[in-house]
Amino acid sequence: MANVDVEGFSFIELSFKKIDKEYFGFDESDIENLELLTNLLPSKEKIVIREVPKNKQSGNLRFLFSFLDHIIEDGIQEIGKESRDSLSRLVQKKFSFDGSEINPNTFASSYSKWSQKTKEGDYDDTRKAIAKALGIS
Image (cartoon, rainbow, N blue to C red; front, side, top):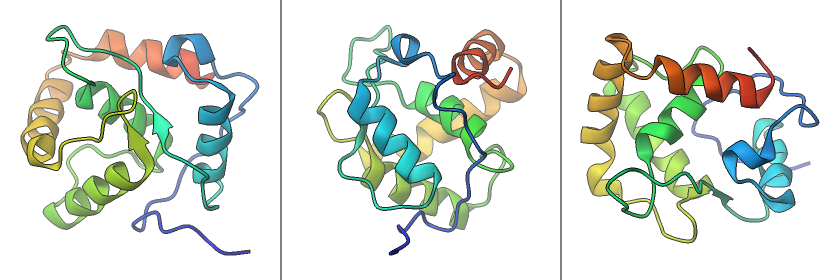
């Protein structure tokens, strides 16, 4: 079997029957592609993140970062520049915001803001809700 290029990341084991699809807005295709991704297999299409931020732009990178921080082995907080670049490539290849491509130009600044605010505890409620919806809390 051909392994998928996941930019050097590995993923925790998830129970896909426990994932709250409604919370994430995932359809069956998203769950299937998430399962393929976390098992390091080629996905058929991008996983769609449908969570919309307050500013009504196409998607919420900080929500996606919190999601990835839970499913990537050892998380993504305080990763170095090389790992951030790898994360950006992974996100570009494997995720979209409800049909829109993720803007690589806002990735670095969004990651920095997310990382800082996560350290300060600003996203604790979101992180708890994501963990619960993933069935890992």
